[in-house]
Length: 326
Ligand SMILES: [Zn+2]
Ligand SMILES: [Zn+2]
Image: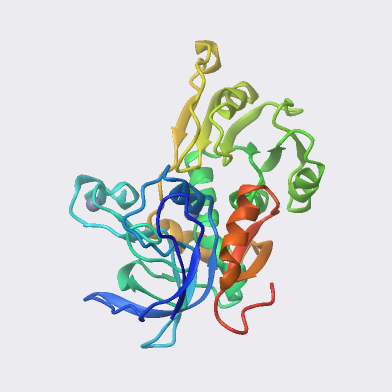
């Protein structure tokens, strides 16, 4: 099989021919159709999130076909849990101490074939093509979990309007919430994109929203946005950080937190989150905005994400016939 391989931290991806992976007990062998690119992939390349092994195949938003049944499945970031630690037993398998993650501990979807634990594969809605479904599997899931952890906000701010934001914005609007989108100051194109997917207001992260927010979700990996978001959120409101890695949060005056404001992170996702969002997606219906790249251009896709050249999600179209964005 062909695979885009990461040999070491900070290396460029290298296209290689590898033997097809062998499924272990409980795993299924999958033919990859498409794989979404995630900012976490950049954090793994940079060493901010440690890789499980090298050489490593990245990719944890995988739409694939089972080689045994032909069924189409989604393979998300959460690839395996022990099922026995106190987090697993408490219904928070996303926090499992021994969890293994797709595209970090288990080789992922920047490849033509992969293996995955059958119990962690998610059913996909039939109405979504492979390219359109891929960004739901991490960007969508993290956005969804972040919104759920924000309580039940009528007015929700979103800082960093990329892949996760453009999906959760549509869900929030479907649920009757007003979305206020914050982009890099001066990013008129990003602000227009946010409005095109339902935001009632869009501006720079240096601006105050026209109304006080009930909650804010931060998807940009920028800790300095935490006090900024707290300032925009009213009493009792939550600021939810969706990234796996963030620059340091600057010190802040206690009055920004006073009034029972909450700052929290979102870590990974549960299988229940996956089933919930994938059932909701066709009802909204969520329209993902996708830029497709062939496998041999996986590095270009990472570069475009890093340099902020994308609106929506980058997806690697792995299988022939998956090249047209849907
Ligand atoms: Zn566990
Ligand atoms: Zn991800």
